[in-house]
Length: 304
Ligand code: KIV
Image (cartoon, rainbow, N blue to C red; front, side, top):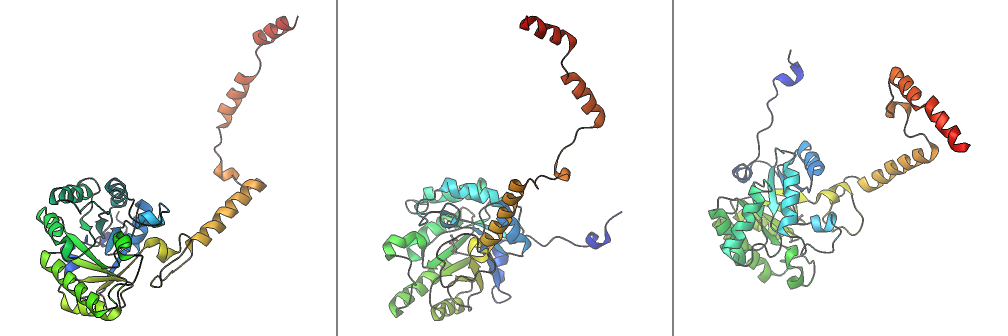
């Protein structure tokens, strides 16, 4: 007999790049990063539209100071872990620095690894007009592309640090041209990171594809934050645009301390957390383990 509470529920439809694109003007798009099976499950159960396997894995998982050291191998491995969660959300793999900078062939080969080995359903790459040729190459290989403009962390050395971008009119105007170029090339959405809200609003109004903001104000078509920032899982500096909704680190330390206290006191493991042997087997074992007469005689002989 089927359970009436679940029988009529159809699972929510899988998100795709065209569906994300079509959400513009309909409702806000929810995006968050994830890097493994459990974080993908949390994001998906909470209702994410897009899970970005971000190269921010370098900062929040691997403990590094920037994103420049992560490789395609690292990113594909994390993307594959996320894909095992079979999320309803669209899985976007973040192409790392130098994986889409040298040639169309190498760019397509790397993007293809995200799809074939990582089971990504789209890739993201940083930059505007400079990267349009590579965006087109990936699109020609039938892989949807998400753009990323503003503070692009892979350009940290060229930008001279992690700084808000587009505060000056000239730079802001360049960013508008970059956004239009990405749209024209065929990107299905663009992340706008750390730019003034006025600029983000102008880009959002001018484009027919969605903008997804991180530190770009409330006017974008969607918002994204890093998983560990939302949940307060990790220590160290967080940007002005981060809103932390809980403190998982403190909750985890409290739970772990309780475990260690139970080890110290002997309260762990309890009888219910322990395996027991059936009584008959215990009897046989005790009998088997008793010293046998022949063994006793041998021991006595040895002592003489
Ligand atoms: O890698 C990442 O987490 C990102 C987001 C900040 C958009 O690119």
